[in-house]
Length: 289
Image 1 (spheres, rainbow, N blue to C red):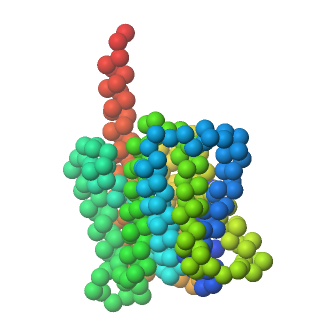
Image 2: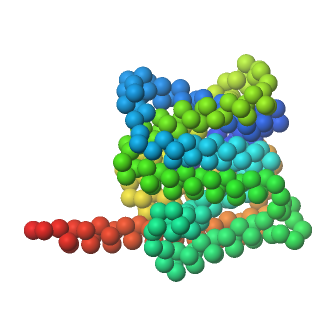
Image 3: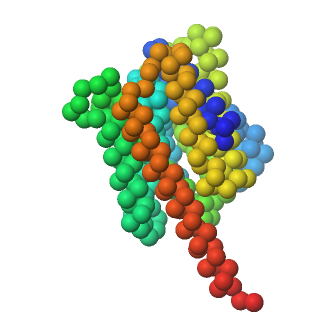
């Protein structure tokens, strides 16, 4: 999980560094291309089995939402202080609460609803609409919030698809469709990269893939409730990078709002973990002897 946080910080640093010359849509294309290349050996080895699915419509929707969400998040990381953008990216956990009730038909109790409300209050504190400050609500912040919502949709879709699809199939479909859907934006914003920039763009894509791989591995071999808080260490990493490389000093508003967002999302993660343990215990108790 710490390696995932480090890789994510490296990726966002390159996004911001290259942002003046390479628009978000073009950077997204390179990110998707790197992910596809990493998964290419699996695609070659499995052949048609790598694309076996009974619900291509949901996969297409997930990939479209993920691609647009990635473009919006890259734009936000380019235009916002890294700490602000990173803190807002955690709101995807807050969006999962209403989506779980509406899409997955989960029963959402008052505790999770209350935690989500507190988290969105934290967002308002960070964006402080109507209050003068170093950074207030604007297009980049709205882009990150929209990106978080779209990523929450992809996570919700994954919960539905994992019932009858393997993770490998979902990754292959996401990489393939993500690359295809990223082509139009790349064409509209295309410019031939300098050799050194091409290396950095490739590194950005590889770091994005490492971020996902390490995160999935950490969550799979460790207790989810214990692993999730470690992901928030990237807030510390991005603050360090923002201050040292981009001279971005987080404001009191950012720190206070981020604290509310982190606390609420941690509570939601813990609560969902407790509920899943309770459901598992009920299933075990109902099994015949």
